[in-house]
Length: 567
Length: 61
Image 1: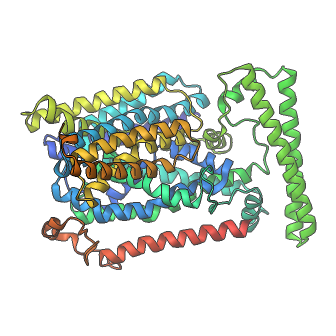
Image 2: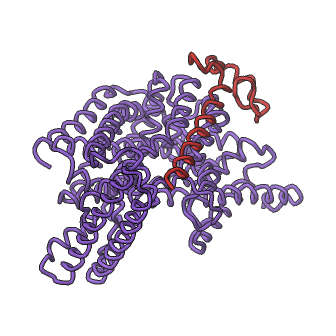
Image 3: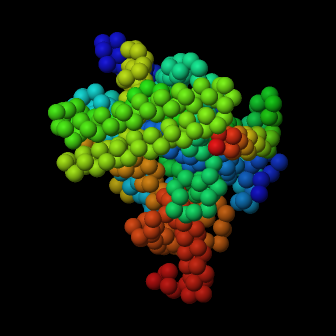
């Protein structure tokens, strides 16, 4: 990065944060602070919901998923349209009618106080734990690549988002998210346009898709019924619907975004906006990764995208064993380029036999290159147990730094930070709100007025920000950052969703039955997570089904033997 | 499970309150005037994306 990149980066992130603070500096009413000033139109709500879900991990890591595994990851989002439609029809009118600040207030109105506390506690636990990852994930990638100090980056990014969220509350989150998403979209579209311009001139759209397809990168839909397969149509549609229903319907960081609409109509349209656009958005980001893969079939890719592994190789260039890996990998890549150029030429001349043989030769070289990469990664791990080549998170940033011009680099790094801030601010806003409304005002200061609750919310928001920074400072790299966030959510979301589904649709179940049913189901999910090796997408469904089943059973038992629950 | 405007009727006592949500009856959009048509549009767009992705998977294989 040069001075131009730093000007674009710092100007963008400080400009948006400053504008957010300026616009929302006079929020003195608790209602406005927690739910916004009620003038938010549906388009802005839609952007806000999208920005809350799409963290920096989405834009850094998803292209890497596309590069490594193709489009299959999009199946995770197959549940979004159905889930958001269900929320728009059933959940939203209830939240609007009761004029709640948090989703968990509804649980008290329907069941009892302890069920509300359980729902809010599950939210604070999983969102509080995940909050550290939202900052850590982009920070570790940026600092490894740019050589910035990790702790200083985490602390300064965390403090900036804490400041504007604490000052402006819900409106500050929404106002800044609008501009942050603009920067993200402009950055991603610029990167895609520049990437396409860098593909070989004679590579047509059909060639690109065929090439990516031949390497199994365009495998968007897989109808396999294997439970061990992580991304399939079925796990996406069934498990994904439950995961998304749980996230959008019961996670306060999302609920707070869409209940801030000026009316039911605005909130509903904001949700449906996401129901329509989420899948094409994810396909676009994954396709960017697939195009980067195609690009590196004609340009030499690094042996590792992972910055730490690359730095290790650079600092041990004189080591003959490591140098041999680099040379062998480079030779394999040269062969791949040669065979693929032959494939392209034969394809354009309509010589399918020669094209097939050229591609088979290229695929064999690709396998050879992959074996060299794996052997080198194993060697690196043996030398340094801490080293873990995690290429997926570094593919896009490596491409940006090596191939894009200055100014655009700054814009894209600003986009990653904008995405960090947009999701982080919504999380902190929700954590502060739930802590005040669901716990402080009920258990600590029952007679607290609005002014005191406003001050308390600001302090709790800042405190959760400090906790998130602390977690981020001590976080360790997971297998893949976006998956780590999703896995964490999937463990808790099923039970949280069941609390609401039972509340809405099973009128016979009362407070005690759902409370004990939920606790038992949550314990079961923990046990299954540590004993089974199924895709994490199934856990929301399992947790939800178990909670509903247990609560119905307990309710039946209680009906026959009421003294069991009373005692 | 929903009324003509796409509002839930799962809770019997909620219907009157739903009507009091003044502007919830129409979407206000020029092409999708009722909520039912908006939900159908969402589900159709999903099916369309699914078909396109399946076609992409098959054609590129």
